[in-house]
Structures are given as C-alpha cells and as structure tokens.
Image (cartoon, rainbow, N blue to C red; front, side, top):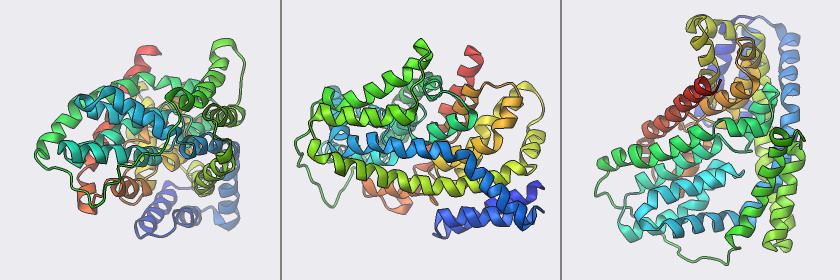
Length: 417
C-alpha cells in the first residue's frame, strides 16, 4: 500500500475531528479511505483494520482494569487530598512548584492528565484570587506538571506503548524519570517565569469561587494504593517476579478503598473509573484500526527516507512518530497508540531497545497533544475559565514543555545506552 493513502486517511480524520465530528468515527472513516486510496481494496482494508485492533486488544483490557485505581483516587477524595497536602506544605512562596508537583504526582500515580488538572484547578483558583496572580502561568504549571507525570505513569498512553513494544510497563515508566524531573524544574523555574513577564499584572478574574472543602482522607491513606501498584510493578525489574498491570492496578484500587475507609464509595468509584476508561477503550479501537492501515503502508519507509539512515536519524523515528500522531489526534493516548502500533517493528529493527522505543514514543506524544481539536485543550481551559483565544496563547509554552521532555529523554537514552 502506498504512503499517500495513509496520509490522506489521516488528513481526512483530522479534518473531521476539527469539524467536531466524533473522533472514533473520524478515525474509522480515515482508515477506510486510507486503505482504499492506498490500493488495498475493500477486503484488504477491513483485514488490516481488524489486525490493527487485534494488536492493541491486550492493552485495552489492561486499560479497563486501570479504571479501578483511577476511580478510587478521584471518588474517595484521595487525589484532592494529595494535591492539597503538597500545596499546603510548599506554601504560596513556591506556588507554581506546588501546582506543578501536584498534577505531576496525580498523573504519575494513574489519574488522567485532564482530570488531574481539573482536580488541582480549584486550589489554583483560590490562590490566584488571593494573590492576584494571572491564571495563565497557573494553568501552565498544572499542564507542565501533568505532562511530566504522564510519561512516568501507568496511564493508557504508557500502557499501550509498553504493550506494542512488548516491554515491561515498570521499565518504560522508569526510563523517563530523569526527563520528568528535569522537565518539572525547567518548567517551573524557566518557562513559567518567561511566560509570566508577558502576563505581568494580569490578575485572574473568576466569575464563581467555591472555597468549600469536603472532608478528605489523610495523605498517607490517599497514597497507599498507588504505592502498592508501584511496588508490585517494580517486582519484575528488582527480583524477576512479573506482576501484570491487569492485576497490579485493580489491587492498588482495592488497597486505596481499604486505606481511606471509603467502602460506601467502592461501587461508585469503580463505575466512575470504568466510565472514563470505556471512552478511552472505544477510542483505542478506532486508533488501532487506522494504525493497522498505517502499519501496512509504506509510510514508515517514507519517514525513514526523510530522516536518513544514520543511527541518530533512526533513533529520532520513535519520538517523531509520537509527535506526528499526537498532533494528528490531539491526544497523548491516541498518538502513542498509532505511533507505537505502526512504527514499533521498524524502531526495534533499528537497534533501539523495546523499553526505550516505548519510552521515546510515549514522550514524543506529549509535544502536541494539546491542540484545539482535542478534548484536553477545552477541558483544561474550562477548568480555569479561559476563553478560546486565551487558551490558544498557551500552546507555544505547552509545546516547549513537551519538546523539553523529548529532548531530555533522547539525551538520557544516549547517556544510559
């Protein structure tokens, strides 16, 4: 199949998503058109779409299981407790670090990045009103911290990348720890100060401010579930005992329920987590379908030819594929899915290990996942009452954070490999 078919299919999907058509059906239609235009024929197109979906089915099952932990963290108040504790301990003097660290930690332990931002946003709103600080650096701190946490998390994007490269999830999470820490520091102490000069004196103005806080569980009770998950996943690299995320993530959720004593919210938590993950699972079916078309096309050969055949050029294929696909879908999860499913064989053949291939694709998917045709753009802007024009002004700074993380990951790969 020619590369032009896959490219046209992607373009059609992007245009439909921008026009507010369902992302799921946009990607499916793009896959069908891509296969037909590329010369696969109707039966070949359907066969490759189904093959692409089959390839990511194991990851979809693990992602649904991850909903238990995510739902427990949100519905028991554990996520809010974690963010409140960090902000209170660091204080107003280090408010940007506190907000970034809060969203980083929440995302790192398995909360969706947009949900993490929405969870921390009420605290940011209160502080912005109290201190007369602009909401622009406040939101950038939360988004930047979320991106740092997302590349070391058991979230769908990391799970799917690890699955498609057949790499241990814990190792893929650990590979980007250094870039995540560096990214957090540079975001807080360099990118945000540069941005703040632009909005100096632009105090936040919110129409409604609800400062009421419900009774929250303790910090240690809140963090108990995620700690158990990390411990279980770490058994494989530490002692050679493999505990699949399909088991570790729900166990962490159960521990979280026990530690917080929120038994009455167990059903509500599981239902909420399943609802969130079901949306992702359905989206992954369509991304798997278009990934099957891309994988069967010559698009990978075209990208390799464009990059060249040197060692560094071949290495760039991993993060670059994540960047391109996240831009196409405006989603970290969908971008990491299509990139890893389509380019994993080529990346592995170039000599990059499975762990680093998955880690580099995953970090690349954070560079342009915030474009306006995705839900993250609108959810995060709405969390701090930004209009479209205001939200658009953050895109260059968000992209800078993603590029920083990607560059740090590539450098870390060269140092450690």
